[in-house]
Image (tube, rainbow, N blue to C red):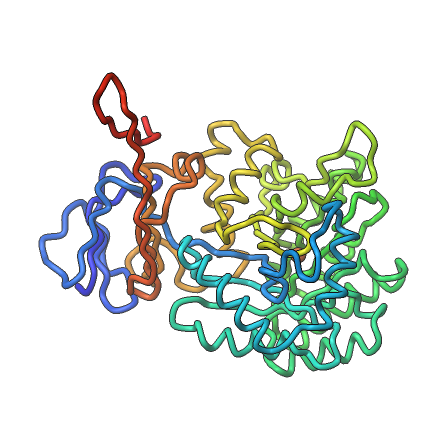
Length: 422
Ligand code: FE2
């Protein structure tokens, strides 16, 4: 063995396990492994899971908060205005440097797979060129998928369709779209049809920003599902945000959810951004503007959680930790039931990996050794305490390490350690 993790708690398994890693693969999971390895990590009863998968981030916009000015209202529309100013100063090095910093933050939090959107409504495709280089630079530790994302619309921006094709020819991995943002409903329908036609022609997955609005008349997801079935793309298509589903009437939502299941469309919800951006046109009561996560999961649809933004004009917070999305999801989606809490981590691990199409992912012999050791005994504790990622392993190598904070209280004249777990 090259690396052994000892005394690991594993979701769904009784007792503790040793995990033996040879090269970049998990070789064996067993209650006690007799042999030794040059690197041995003692999990000491803490949770070990497959690494985290970030399915929705905009690396071209990360870490631009306050540039050239802060978003005073916090609204989507002021964010778009500010981004319109910032984008004028976008350079190759600027994008590379910010994206790389954000990726380091994510890696420290256990993320080894990242799907990033990149705005291709730019005749120079500056950000795409930069992120293609970053994808290669980090390949040993992080697998990146780049989505060709037409931020201003495929048909509402000059030569939008040609820019999408150029982005795919240059090496973008995934076809993006934004039907609800196109100037007209007709353009939006063309957007969906083009995205899925390109996905079929170029044999790439598709991931559309879809119905990210509180407008209950925004209904492009039904066309995404229908075109997915017509073109035989089941399992290869993702709809991100789908916040309008919150506002649909129940009869329509019921019909739509059956359609999504039939089409095998993955849904990505982005609790951090959408909790602050949606409902901005409402007087009280203010809608939450979230897709119907509980109902989608109950109907056998794959749902995962994305971060969306880290410190950009739309969302000024974030440290690149998918667990923050899980924590907000519990609250905003009212998913505090015991079973819901226990599966929340799956929305950034196994379910996210299914959306990503990650090969060899999981905790089993023969799978690639992409693992996280949490400083917490269970998945619920990990989300509750936003537990430090003690070690992160990618392709069988330790790629990040965190010393957890340790608290002490002075209690009856003595120092006493406090650990926040039962
Ligand atoms: Fe997004």
